[in-house]
Amino acid sequence: MTEQELMLTAVLECERVNLYVDRPALSLEQKARLEDIKARRENGEPLQYILGTCEFMGLTLKVDGRVLIPRPETELLVEAACEKVKLFFPQKTVKILDLGTGSGNIAVSLAKCVESCQITAVDVSPEAIALARENAENLQVAHKIHFVTADMSAYLKEQKARQNTFDLIISNPPYVPTNQLARLPRDVQREPRLALAGGEDGLDFYRAILVQGVACLNSGGFFLFEIGDGQRANLEKVCSSDTQFAKIEFQKDYVQTDRIMVVNKSQNLELRTQN
Ligand code: GLN
Image (cartoon, rainbow, N blue to C red; front, side):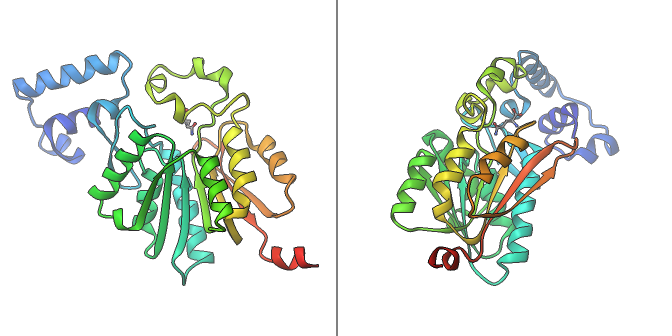
């Protein structure tokens, strides 16, 4: 939907099609609400924060200033994860770890798409975890997701020590390089910096997850990441230093930019280390 359609359907509490079929007139109260939304929008507030909701994978999620607004590109990440589950783990209860869950968009939509799964969703922000839990409850998947407030590196270290492993480790981590933060569009600047800032080259979280997380991934398991513009080559370099990664795939987004990275951990690692 266009922004205009999103505003009108919210104010009129109707479906998009009704805007064109019924051509409803706005009451005075609705006009005032629409003016208020437009004024806040002109002031740089993201529309999803104003309306308090965001559509993701056909689900309506609650969003506000506590979390990053789910982007359409991230749907490609969820689709890639569902594809891997279908191909490689069709018969089992898949163990999935979502790092930096934010609104819970990835965890909640995976819980909806994957029949048999056990998801752990981690975020360093307790406010984000509260909202993610609310989304999981509203969409009736809370029983499939365990929420944890923790720094992702510390969490991975702890799981490594406990030898807790997963089939999929998925993340849309903060990936904006420090020097680009001030140049982000005005509405993106309203989103939590914690969810955007990826360190000097934007790769801090990928390095942490790949290094700490490899021990937490089952052999044959997958890391699935959303990545930033132009980060592919440097991420390939990061991965090439670890011989446990059997295969790296990239997928492009709607504007032909490499946006999804899937790293497969070798199947026969145990055999290799024994030899
Ligand atoms: N894609 C986001 C943007 O539009 C960045 C999200 C992230 O850092 N994970 O800026």
